[in-house]
Amino acid sequence: MKNKRKRNGAGYYMICAVVLVFTIVCLYPFLYVVAMSFSSTNAILSGKVTILPIEFQFTAYQEILKKQQIWSSLWVTIRVTLLGTGLSLALTIAAAYTLAKKKLKGRKFFSGLILFTMYFSGGMIPTFLVVKGLGMYNTLGALFIPNAVSVFNFIVMRTFFREIPENLEEAAYLDGANDWQTLIKVVLPLSLPIIATIGLFYAVGYWNDYFSALLYIQDPAKYSLQLRLRSLLFTEELNTMAGEAVGTPVMAESLKMASIVVGTLPIIVVYPWLQKYFVKGVMLGSVKG
Amino acid sequence: MKRKMEKPLHFYLRRDWLLYLFLVPVLLYFILFKYAPMYGLVIAFKDYNVFEGITKSEWNGLENWADAFANKWVWKSVKNTLVLNLVTLAINFPLTIILSLLLNEIFHMKFKKITQSILYLPHFISWVVVAGIATDLFAQNGGAINSLLGRVGIGPVPFLSNEGWWVFTYALCNVWKEIGWGTIIYLAALTGVDESLYEAAYIDGATKLQRTIYITLPMIKSVVVTMLILSVSKMMNIGLDAPLLLGNDKVMEVSQVLSTYIYRLGIEKAQYSVSTVIGLFQSLVNIIILFIADLFAKLIGEEGII
Image (tube, rainbow over all chains, first blue to last red; front, side):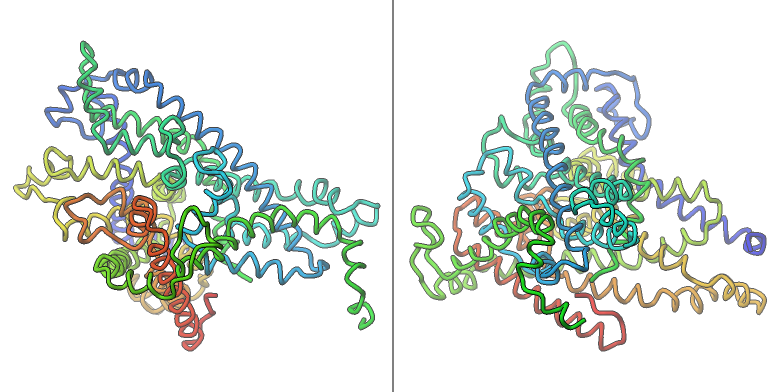
């Protein structure tokens, strides 16, 4: 088969070339950001920077990492990501495990209750009022509790649990294990890949979330990283900062790019693991019902 | 068998009490954060007062609805939501299919793997970062893209400050972010295509293009149709991040969409009741579109989408 296709030489390499163009367009902004963040002011001003840093320097990073607000926002986001991912996984596993069990009475009703929220919701304002009414306004909890469960992830996980051979669980029950022990000793060890995938999905979601903080956080000291990034990227804050940095000539632009790198680096670091599983996750999620 | 079905409720409660216990926090979550806000929708028919709360505020019939629909920004937001979604779909949908077909042809596995890794990556980048990069790259003065265009004698193009160009730039950023991710579903469908069909066609002298048109496309037709119906059914839905972060005062006439307007009216101006009306109106239209799309999918012999 391979050889037969190879005979279409020229056409094949044209296809490769087109795919390469798509890939370069995809990659270019990343290279540009990194290059800008390491380049000198002169190089940026003269518009010479394209994909490689020119007059390599760390100044922008030194300036950005000196900022107390970056660290406090980073700390907020780290806590939200860890606590949120933990809560999300616990709730999603609990829901998926119980509702994957055919023996459970009322299973269809409870599943329906969850699935319904995919198609209809109270929307932004009523949710905001409820969260505020619960006393969560301006608290860390508001950044992960109101959106803890993704129905899509619930479906993915339930589909996975359903595919675990029933006799494995039956054997555990016969040995006198209860539902909790079966979950911990039989089901979870078999589901580590899917738990890792969904955990990573949740973690990336929390890391990238900016809307919850925009909605629920008023106190700048409690800003999450993305909200902080927005105020750095879209207001004059950094221009003033660049002006103040006497003696170390840095441009607002390289400061912006450095802060983008700082905020995105963790995603890039976990990406190889993420990629290992997400294709399967997407396919499981498309099997509905 | 029949007797088994009629066991009393407490039998199940006793046998599966642990499972029901697991469900308690889940149900609590959905009731508090999903169903309580649904109840909160009643303020669409009330004169919501912060001090009285949702339950005690006075009913005022359809007054909020009259206010909402008399507001020209509401209609503009509806129009802009549809326009931005349609333009994005028109570019993204065919391009995603083309890219999938191209990727499917590649049999140098290493090259394919690396390109796919790069193409999927933007999906995981936050909108704050994407918009931050985009405003820099597309800037009219000194932006990398305009200086590149300047070198070949074009521009400067007002990508972010001209209304028409802004819509295009918005769509482009969306395509950049999601095109790779979108290929996953098509690539999965494409691996299901029977290889022997290609071989037979090859022996009959079919060219690559002919094979694509007469074998590949019919084989993935049902995925394509389902994805199209799914996207169309989401026409009235739009994320808040992209239009809010990419938008600016100069292009407000085209960048104000339902989600951003609800945010600005509800959260920034604290007009809770009227903004709730707009949100409820959007949800209802969404559900109607969804049902029609589902019906349509079944009518043309595809799987339903609900």
